[in-house]
Amino acid sequence: MANSQIDIYEIGEALPIAVVGEPSDLSESDQKTIRSMIGSDTRNFMGTLALTWLLIILAITVAVHLNSMLANVAVICFIATRQNVLGLLTHEQVHSLGLRSQLGDAITNAFCAFPILITLQGYRHIHLTHHRKYFTELDPDYRRKQGKQWTFPQSTQAFLSTLFCDLIGLSLVSTIRGKKPDKAMDKKGQKPNIVFHLGYYGAIALALTLTNTWTYFLLYWIVPIATVLQVIVRWGAVSEHRYNLVNPSIQESTPLIQPRWWEALVMPNLNFALHVYHHWYPTIPFNKLPLVHNIFVDSGLVNSEHVFDGYIDYFLFLVAKGRHKIEKTIEQQPDMHTLTPS
Image (cartoon, rainbow, N blue to C red; front, side, top):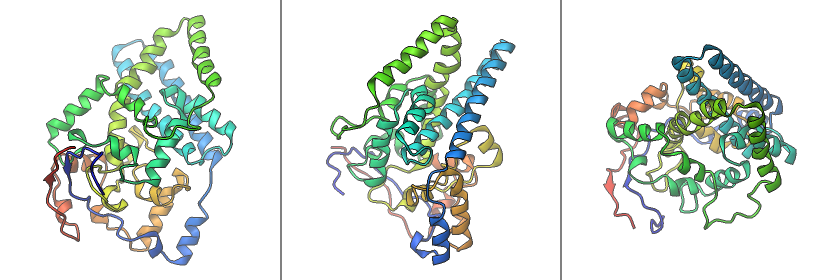
């Protein structure tokens, strides 16, 4: 692939391959089982959405009742994790895995996307293009996630410095822009109904004014979005793919991470860490991806030595520790070399 329009800081080593086979390597029976999982799961989608908002409301209620700095910090962190779930539910609807209708899109905008300052339509264009044009110059995710911050392995200090910048709100604008189509890309049909969009925020502002709850809104909603959520979004992105590669396979650029139970409890990601399978089966809802993984494991197509044992294991890998995982790869990976950005 030509790199004339993409500034790649360094070409990195491919990830240790965890899923060593392809979907076509499965037996016909297993392939049939997986095909039976295709389709939206409205009940699970709506159940997850309802639980998420219930937990948000309960957390804010507790924080207001306790009225302490410690409670506020804890609740801000907790709400950020639920805001991330709203983003992941938006991702589900992008693939029409939640509610298969225009009304479903409107519901997702109202209760998932708009609250975290993005739109379903803009994100749909970005994300589906990422799937279709994977790791090419036409992939908006690949285009935007190049440079020093996205080059791994990197030092612990450098990575923590990036996360600190996210935490103090320096990444909010770029994150929101990252969910919108590039100016150079076709935006046709990628905007929500403008009346609904403006009316939604206008109604929220009016309600906050009439109830005199702007302070609570800013503290318990905007602060999490601008700070802790940005750290979570960054972590989700680096856990999703290694971007400083050229023409990799999905397995070479996508880690397979099995969060530990407490990690999944503290920071639920709707099985996003099983991202290899999502790219192969984008029409299977998130709650069924573990079943897909089990089928690949049972078929002998998963190298357990290359499955990351939780987020901490993957973090150590990213900061140039745990290099033994690279050494265990079956094929010798190319040495890193620097490209001169165009």
